[in-house]
Image (tube, rainbow, N blue to C red; front, side):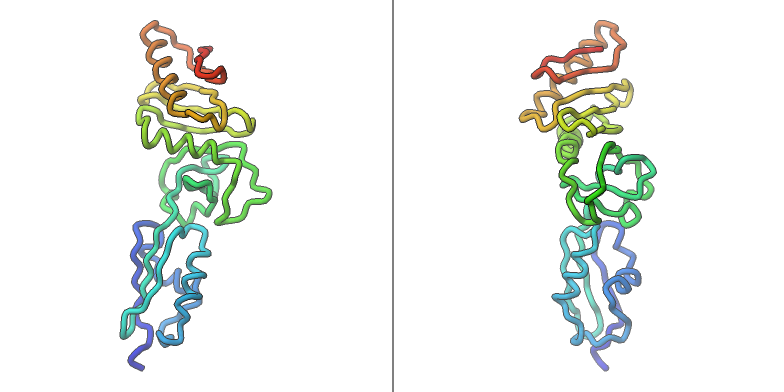
Length: 215
């Protein structure tokens, strides 16, 4: 009786932080289970199988506590529409919006995603180029705010964005270009040059090997 489960402690910075009862239910763990009857390895496998969980650890703290450490997937984009039930992380893994911190946040939308063969927790290969570009803007080009990326054309990304939260632009960039940083730098220069000329056009086509066509 000394080693009956009384407490579940979760260390996470995301959705699961305060969801002890829900997580226990998902894993088939109940209050008053004997800690030594619980298979820690199997519990970790079940926890890792939850789509929103990226990295996890499970261990006991005697006499009565089961501990979970969880690194959750960070939602970076919504799938196909702003009201989507699905989000994607930076690696292109799809998981439920309801089991992430994206429920009340504003995220870019990746359009044209086929979910025919996708399952929660799996990678969606078609979104790789879009997610790589999105993460590049987040890390290195803070003046660019991506609103949506359409991947319907597998050879060209169709991007709706705002520059410095002021100018709305539509940008076409070759998907999977080897030097996206160069293209985004060229785009910024073209936007600033157009502003100096008083050119209010907002379509920028970078499909021509770094040459920016303004339409």
